[in-house]
Length: 402
Image 1 (cartoon, rainbow, N blue to C red):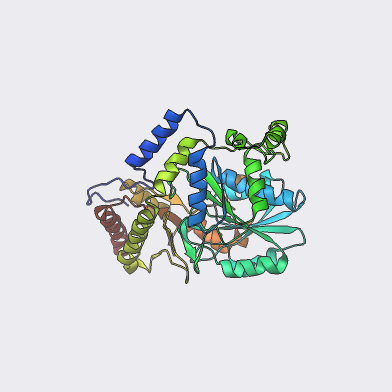
Image 2: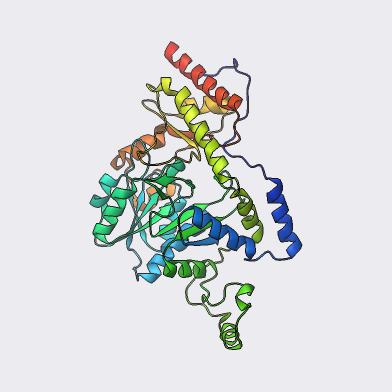
């Protein structure tokens, strides 16, 4: 099925328009001859964590790295064993569960909610065993999970919670910000995300012990007395003497997950306009929901959880009764980019490692076959949105005529 009735536009999933301030701050970094952790990194950590109602922020080079050190910190501090279990939703980007494997622990998959796509809190307890140590909740596509129920379960079973919030920034769940709903949270500033610095990730936490360990793990496992050259400043002779002896003291098996001042400068600049960015994304999401609502017999549109905000990193859709490929091809042929809804349990490596039967995860299986997402970013114009709507209408007009 195809149609040449509509003049073709190009609707891309991501966007990047660097402001004059962003370029100015990057030039300041270059002029300073300081690319390692410095004032822009500190400023970004402080501002980002405060916006998300957290005391501490720790920068790294990706959301995946932030996830990895979050689990590694908890495992080391709480003396968890290799092969202990971590609950992971059956729909998420593969990094969420890969980091469990890389930390020598075992991911245990839990099916997701049909309407909101987060881990299904009603199914969590049946997956808990004596080896379960943590739950990784994933706020997918901009929508926070059912955190009241999940936190109650975690408290009951003495489990830790990691928020994979790489796709959801600046959103609240019952007046609490994402990033402040767990023990440690993880965000990404990768391409096509809400804040875009090229590469980058950040952890948030309110626990100082976790914060110190996270920063150590990002920096090769270094002793917290010395992470950067600034740690030498304004020290007494005795303090400096101790620092000198511990500059190459490593207390954990860490990683080189650091980011540069250039990425931090881009992040600082974008924090000036984050509220305008999110406002536009929410407007675009609500506009598409309103204008596509008449197609409810064919497609499931995004829904917003009661008491929560949606950041609309993307616009998720699911065909009720038909598999997606024909429709996705139609959209792509008309210049509208699409992506699958984060398939996980059907990935070749996961089927081989865990011998997963997709029928055991009926919602995830349905989403894998029928679900996808389209753009919703702040730089889409009304003409772009109306074009998306027109393409949808054209497709389903043809479906109905057949």
